[in-house]
Image (cartoon, rainbow, N blue to C red; front, side):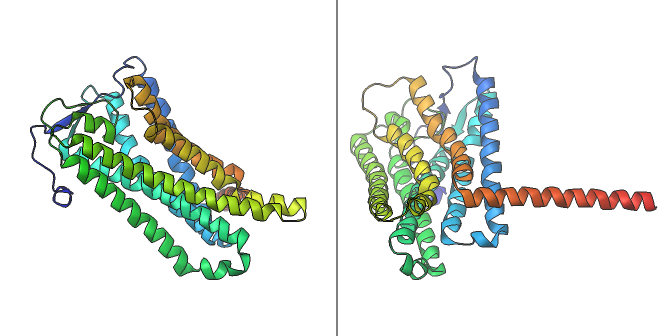
Length: 330
């Protein structure tokens, strides 16, 4: 990772993450709350993955995109949350220079991959509803694989560009990061040199343009989807068509709603408490809500999950009955 980024040698060898320092008496409560949310997110996404993998009727691009989305969400939270949980229980919140760069690279990579996957999922719904006769051609296994691969490649490029731009700057003064993770804006405030403002402007424009570009493509997809749905004569047909998009649209609103708060907020002075709480909403709350939304809003996935749970319960019951019969017979 160090060789790839070509990091500068500066006087700062480590950073101190002070994001939760304004809440010294609440850190244990935060630890328990975030741990439960993190475990729920992991189990929820793993349950979605195993359900889709085991249910052949769900082996369609729509649900395979959902698998890729769950994987990106697991990896994104893994890049940030375990370290955040450890800091909540520790008196020392230092992170090595290279570890900080690595965390930024992976968090940006998986975060933007998540955004790109939401965008191609919107395109998938657009093709399914607006061009159903061409769906099998446009969303062939090769087409699906290309869209997922480009999403991951785009996320990796974004992570690399942002991390290289920031960590090529010299850090020669304070090393206290006003955040619970190696986030771009707090680190830019610690950098020194004449081109910090240029780098900050460039990083901000790249992130905002990428997010707004994804959001615009999703809006265009749903504008066409809504226009097509409104032309469906029967109310039942309109409801069925919209129900296939409801979970994705809800996750998009939550995802881009919190992202816009982070990247489009005013440049005025912000309190450490406010920045920390806003960061938590995007890092912990959004991934926590995503599997809930997909599980509850998608009827087909919800039915498959129920069948998976019932089949496992029946299997366990039959195994217990078999062992009980063996013991009685023995």
